[in-house]
Image (tube, rainbow, N blue to C red):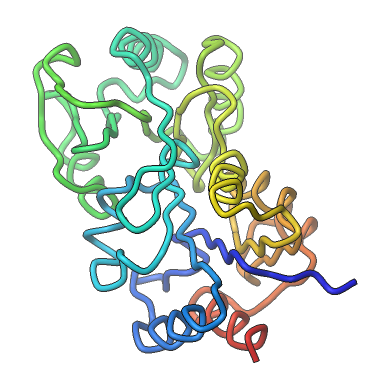
Length: 269
């Protein structure tokens, strides 16, 4: 039996977005018009913060699509929060203390992502502070975590590229309430245990009373792994990480060739 695809979930950086962090607005508008006719849903599934996805990338489309943000930590559709898994402030402090003490420590080069904003400590390096503005919205410097008045979802930081996998395992094994996942060559996101893009998409599917066989997922990095394994149909862009290419049902064009929108265009024809 042919799978009836209804939910189309795509990673952002390296998959949907071009290398300059842009995308083809006209093509997406056309896809969404067709989805409206068929009752399909387009979903941005990303490690990025919900606020950044809505206001920095999809400002023109945010009322027409779904979001699985923060690697599954927040799920939203048409302005309605379907699911959110937060850290307590005590847990956030434990994560940040571990980062400052562990081998290959990033010191204070980490960002705490919340529902209403993003936060760095005052001694963050200028380089890390500037880089965060590409991916996060409403970023503030704070003296301490205790003064943050927000629902906190995730901590993100960087490690040396050849140490990223080892640091990811160390954090997950040391903090039973947390899960670290690689989002790029040097980046690690630390969210709640049991949370992934797959768990976020499961929440979204349940909201529509759909099933994994109704899900098509697109990805390129290891934080997309569970999502692609969970989806009824898994697509990897040609520039994807080797382990992602191996598990894909189909390898498509690269992110700079509008791979996701081109493939969706083929499907809806």
